[in-house]
Length: 126
Image 1 (spheres, rainbow, N blue to C red):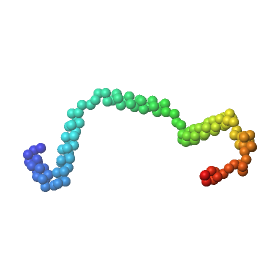
Image 2 (cartoon, rainbow, N blue to C red; image 1 turned 180 degrees about the vertical axis):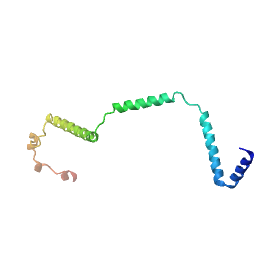
Image 3 (tube, rainbow, N blue to C red; image 1 turned 135 degrees about the horizontal axis):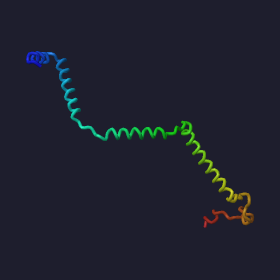
Image 4 (tube, helix red, strand yellow; image 1 turned 120 degrees about the vertical axis):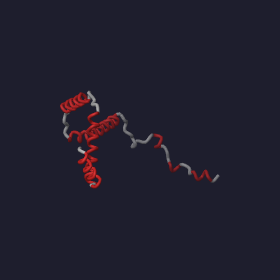
C-alpha cells in the first residue's frame, strides 16, 4: 500500500474495533493458508483410502440380510431345545429306575408288635 493509504487504514483500525477484529481474522486466515501450503502430504494416503473403500464395498456385497424375527426367535428356540433335552433325559433316566414299592412292607415288620414294646420311661426311673 502507498504510505498515505496505509496510515489512514492504521488510524481507522485503531479507532474501529469491528474492523480491527476483522483485520486480525484475515491475518490469521492468511497464516493458516500458508501453513497448509507448506505441509507435506503422505503419498500413500490416497492408496490407503482407496483400499479401505474397496474393502467396505466388498463387505457390503458379502453382507447377507437376516430378518429381525430370525434374531428374535433364535433365543426362544434354543431355550425350548434345552428344555426338551432335559425332559427327555429325565424320562430316559426313569425308565431304568426301579419304582419305589412303598405299599409292600418287609416281612420282619409284620411280626413286630409296637404295643408290646416297653416304654423308654421305664428305663429312666432306674
